[in-house]
Image (cartoon, rainbow, N blue to C red; front, side, top):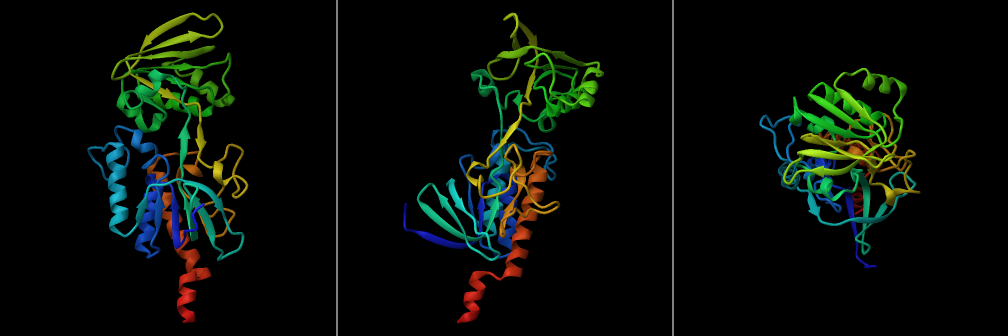
Length: 325
């Protein structure tokens, strides 16, 4: 490990709407933030072709362009954006303490405040055709992308409350929705199951899995397999929504920060404070409910303001040192 240790006021781990918004606000508060992008600079939106539901873009914008613009805005106010991955952390237990974060296994950052915006990763089926057509009709967010399939036939994979909720959401937009459930029953609550079963344009296929997503450039159909009979069948669709869950990117924080049973960081209600003083969480890493770019940006703003107020209350180490000399 390198002997190089850097001391900063505000470290932001992870990019995307939460991280970049936190950087904008932290920069404007003179916290001189340093942001490490992680393995996927820009987060999940870099895999999204069109973003139509973020305020301020009347014609829509593609995800990668939006992330570049957010980065440029953060840099304009003084954020230092670096390519790198946080590989281990050592958070202080005491108020006003210094937190240590190791980047790429060799550089140690000492930070008075840390904002975690590492996001969550959507789970996919793992098919080559599915991955190839992500952004071309395959999506993990019906609320984000359902609008593009208005009056079209689509399919959704999943059996839980999220899948059921997204299926009913799509049913209000799309012509027909085919729901693929791997087992002979749904895991969703009874109320959500009743809602799905009572929606005329939703067809539920049990014991059914995706065998292949059909299409060269865009989704044109789906080959399905009955896992009891091994029989295959095909349907014509233009969109496939995968709703089998998300995995929050919080592995390196285990044992350091409180999280729920699925790994989402727990924050104080209505705030971004974690259980460690001076450590804040924003975006999908602590939000398993909404998972939208606009809500992530909102909590990024909150985290930066919480960090600013925290430093004002405990006194920045830099300010204390200045006052002593």
